Length: 303
Ligand SMILES: C[S@@+](CC[C@H](N)C(=O)[O-])C[C@H]1O[C@@H](n2cnc3c(N)ncnc32)[C@H](O)[C@@H]1O
Ligand code: SF4
Image (tube, protein in one colour):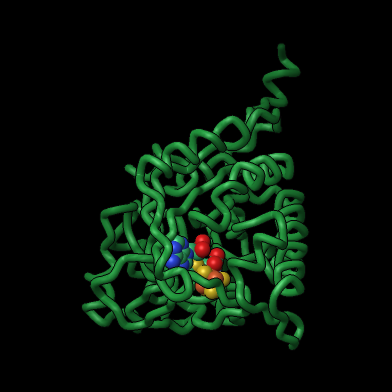
C-alpha cells in the first residue's frame, strides 16, 4: 500500500504510467487535448512561421484575412520578438491562456523563427505549456531542440500511412535542399513522420495526430492510420473534415454525420478529439471564443 502511494501511477490510453503532475497538466490544461479544459483554459498561437517545405493539395495560406477562420490564415506574421511581447500581453490580460502554440501559417519546423520564439517564451514563462503543429518532415532532426524549449505537446498531420495514398495528397516535398514529387515525395514524408512520432513519444511528449478526412482520397484508410498511431503511443486523434480548396476545391467535404461516424470507427483504437475548431494560425483565447482581433487591432504586439 505504502509502496503504491510512493509510486502512484495513472492510465494514459490504456497504458499504466508513473503519475507526474507536471506531465498531467499538459493534458488537463490544454484545450485541444482535453474537452473539459477547452471550457476553462485557452491557447495563444504565434504566427511566426510563414514558409512551408511541402505542398498539400488542400492548403491555401492567406496572410491578410481578418474574417476567415480556418488553418493557414493569419492577420500578420510576427517576428519572434513581437511574439514574446504578444505573450506578455496575453498572460496579463487573459490569464486563462495556459498554452502557447505555433501552427503556421506555414510549417513551424521549416522556419528558424519558430525555435527563436519558443526559446524566448520558454525562458521567460517556463510554466506555460508549449506546443507545435507540424507536417512532421523535420520532426526527427528537431526533437532535441523542441525538448530543450519545453515543448511537451506535438501535433503531427498524418493523412496516410500508405505512400500510394499519400502521393495523392502532397504534390511536392523539399528535403535537405532537394525537391521531390510523386511517390518519392510521399515516401520521404511518411518515413520522417513515423520516425518523428516515435521520437516524440520516446521523449514523453503528448502526440496528437491530425488527419484530414478527404472523401474519395483517404476515407477508406483513416481507421488504419488511427490503429497505427495508437500502436506507436500517440495520445489523441483528430479527424479534420476537408475544407475544399486549391487542388481539392471540387471534393465534397464530409458531412458532420460522416465525420462522427469516422470518429466512432477510430475510437476503439485511440482517444478522439471531437471538439476541434480548425483554428487560425493567430488564434488566441478559448476555443470558439477567440480574442485575437482585440489584440491585433490595438497594434500593441510591440513594446
Ligand atoms: C495550416 S497547418 C499548419 C501546421 C503544419 N504545416 C501542418 O500541416 O500540420 C494546420 C492544420 O490545418 C490543416 N489544414 C490546412 N488546410 C486544410 C484544409 N483545406 N482542410 C482541412 N484541414 C486543413 C492541416 O492539415 C494541419 O493539420
Ligand atoms: S504542411 Fe501545413 S502549411 Fe504546409 S502545405 Fe500542408 S497544410 Fe499547408
